[in-house]
Image (cartoon, rainbow, N blue to C red):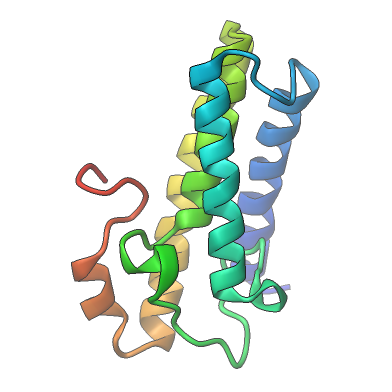
Length: 147
């Protein structure tokens, strides 16, 4: 196994451990109206991003699949990693709905992991797609006008 593959497995593994820890430690659906709206918005963004990318092309690992194309439409025209944004929104809503320091810790680790994962993914995308740098310069990583 290449070093890249190990890194990809670790990043994806940490992501799923954090999400699992949040899901097993509290409700799966936010009851508070604001948190439910945040969760639902995240779910809708996730679905939109998946269908824009094409469900058969979705990859939980940051590695670029052979035959991939650079997707720049749908939510990708504003955010380079809308699926990560959506996961953070959904998990944040659940953490806020039933807050504990433990759940906050797991959400913080998830944030750090996804930033590391997207940084690695962007490096790989830049190596594969010649127009990735221009795309990177006109879009936001996770949150428009912020990051």
